[in-house]
Length: 134
Image (cartoon, rainbow, N blue to C red):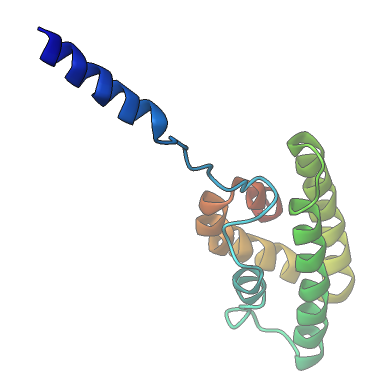
C-alpha cells in the first residue's frame, strides 16, 4: 500500500511540476481572411461589361481607393456594429460615385455582377457582405 501511495505521490508531483499552457488563438477580429489584392482583382473584373477604356481606367482607380477604405474600416479597432454601418455607408457612396462616370444602367449591371462575384469572399469574411450587397 505504501508503494502505491508513494507512486501516486511521485506521479502527482511530476504532473504538477510541468507547466501546462494553452495556446492562444491569434486575434482575427481586426484582420480579414480575404487578401486585399483578391478583393481588388474581383472588383476590377469587368470583362463582361462593355466599357470604354476611359471608364475602365476610372473604375480601376476608384476601386483601388475603395478597397483601401474598406480594409481601413475592417482593420480598425472600432466595434463590429460601427464597422458594419461604416461599410454600408461606404457602399452607398460607392454606388452614387459609380453612377457619375458609368451611368445608371452600367452601374446597376456592374453592381449585380459584383454581388455575384463577391459572394464567395463574403462567406470567408462576413464583413465583406456589406460591400457586396446590391
